[in-house]
Image 1 (cartoon, rainbow, N blue to C red):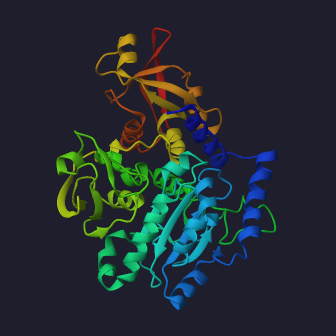
Image 2 (cartoon, rainbow, N blue to C red; image 1 turned 90 degrees about the horizontal axis):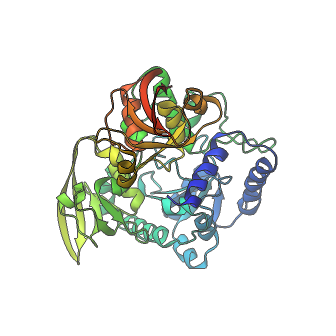
Image 3 (cartoon, rainbow, N blue to C red; image 1 turned 180 degrees about the vertical axis):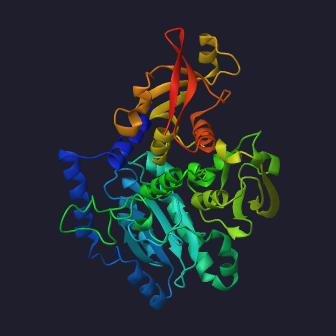
Length: 442
C-alpha cells in the first residue's frame, strides 16, 4: 500500500467518523451548500428528489439514473466532476432521467443496496422500480484525481440496452434486486434512530444532519453486536472484489477479466484472461459492482453459473465457492473496517509481515506474523493502547488462533468467535523480547 493510499484511508476515517472543527468543518459545510447552489436548479440533474425522478422516468419512458454522492468526502471527486461536466458523457446521459442524492437519511433500504463504503455510487432503475445495474469504483475512491468515466460509460450503455430490450431483460434481473432488510430506512436503525431526520437541516448545520452511506453498514454491525449476535459475514466482508475468487477485472470495462490467479476458484472454474463476464446465474452484468453484488448475495458455500463471451463465443462455466471464500476479501481499505478494528482488535491497524521479515525475526510457522502499524488514540479505538500494545509490536499469538493470518481474516475470525466483550491472551514480540498482553475484544 502506497503512502498516499494510507493517508487517504486515515483522512477518510477521520473525516467520516470523528468530530470535525474549524477550517475542515467550514470546508465540508461550504462544499454541501455550494453543491446545492450549483445543481439545485440544474437542467439535467434532479436534486435530492427521487420521487420526482421516478415520475419523470415514467412520463418520458427513460431509465432512472441515481447517483449517490457524499459531497463532504474528497474521494471520488474526480469522477463526480466528470459525470457532471464531461462533454463526451452528455449524449449518454440524455438517455436517462438523472437524480443526484447527497444523503442517505431516507433511502428505501430494500431498493438501495450497494457498496456503502464508497462515496460515489450509482444505481439504474426501470421506471417501474426494478433495478437494472449498479456502479461503484474503488479505483476512483482511492484516487480523488482519477477522472476517467470509461467504466461508467460502459455501465450506462449496457443498462440502456437492457432497458431497450425490456421484454426479454426484465425476468433476468430478479437476482440483482435488493433483498429483505430488518429496517426500511437508515434513520430507523438503532444508533441512527433519533439522531437524524428524513430531511437535511439546511437552516442549520447541514453536514451534521446528513446520514453518510458508510454509517448504514456501521449501524447494522453495531446493532448485531449490541444484541450479542454474530455479525453476518456479508457485513464483515461486503461487496467482495472479484479478487476474492482469483480474478482481476479491467477497470475500463468493468466486466472483462484482466488476469486470473492460477490457484483461485475462478481458475478452477475455467475462467480465462480476456473473458467477458456477461451474466452470473442468468443475471446480466453491467459493471464490476454488479459482479461484486452477485458475490455479495452468494452463500458461504455456493455454486454459481458464469456466462462469458470468449473470443466471440458464448461459454457457460460453473464456479464453486468453497467454505471461507469470503475471508479472501481484503477489507483493510474500507471505512467500515475502522469500526470493526475497534470491536475486534482494540483500534489497532495490523499489517502482514512478508516471508523475508518473518524469517529475519525467527518466526515459526504457527506465529501470526502481524505488525502493529497504527494505534487508535481516542474512545473505543484506544483500547489496545491502554492494554499496553505499541506501534511496531509483532503479534505472534492470540488465544485460540494460529497463523499466519492477515488482518481481514483475523477481524472476521475474532468477531465470529467472540460475540461479547472479553479479553484474550496474546503474545507479542517487542525489541527481541516476548511479552504477554491482554487482547481487548469490545
